[in-house]
Image (cartoon, rainbow, N blue to C red; front, side, top):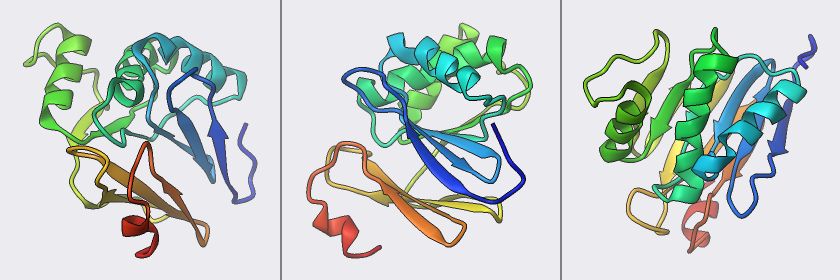
Length: 173
């Protein structure tokens, strides 16, 4: 649970042979990648067990199912378990946004619950609330693949997803 002092921590959530990380900074939470579609409930349980009630931000590093599909099921489950949460979900491809919206609403033109935002991101700063800054950095892993640089509390954390050619990113940051 949250304390009054400022801090930055990373939780690696066990979702089997997939990726899912929880970044915690000064009482705000972000999820990086979501594992497979069958792991959404495991992520919800992990968050509930650790006192997390609000997700600020969710990002997918690239459009492979072991990174994106769990985000879809998690947002679906968040409608029930985190009713007051208003996650802003950043995906690397418009087809993922329309697919997630169709899954959650039953159609691509359906309305999401108030407060949930689905966004397509490109390389550059995608989020900055004055406490946490998130920069997407294009990688060569696959089409629409990005690493994410999180900056908070004077620290920098680089999340790479599955990625090749690490020297193309690491040298810049």
